[in-house]
Image (cartoon, rainbow, N blue to C red):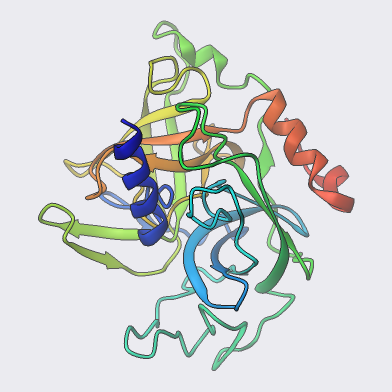
Length: 301
């Protein structure tokens, strides 16, 4: 189990799936011009070399929520990457050239400047302060502490903000009884399609969204700390590599984040997706305690 999870974690970070263990929005997805506060995040090592990408969402002008495995350096030591950069354009990496490994329009993955102009401080920001709630190669599964923060050097305003669901928001869904809405919306920049056992991937590096339906919150895979949704396959929408850290909204038509994209069981991004819950008091307190001067600006339901 640990070996499988570790492999998924590595695959997730490589493909920016959920550790990136899960990846990009796949299946029945649509463009996402709605969640303008959701951005494409690139992480770098101490030499400024690009390591991998994830998704993150603004909670306040300088506070970006993501998955814990995103700032993690993937060495299994619990150490973090040195810095990050985030782009909030819906088409942040659409013009990425695999030969030059650069998007000339936005500057992704190494600059906030491209033919579209210098967007530093408006649609792009850098970060030299990263936090990890404790994610370390899936230790403690299923409570893998897969939450992270990117504290921005330049505040970003004018794009709106996600709100954090209050503690226990999803608890009514623990029971299969009742009339609770069991539909969620996910958003991210990950892999958008895969072919034949995951050997071929397509990534638009574009913000997409899809809807998923709850499977459960209380199994041995979830234990009240993880949300299991029936994602990709048979035209269902879901997440894949690169979507890691992206928001899970509930109610589906709200900006209220209840979890972040964490991991998937398979590397071809088909099947159920697993999302680390943020509607827990310990997680909320951790986020607020590391949010710095903007902690008071974070909307907690």
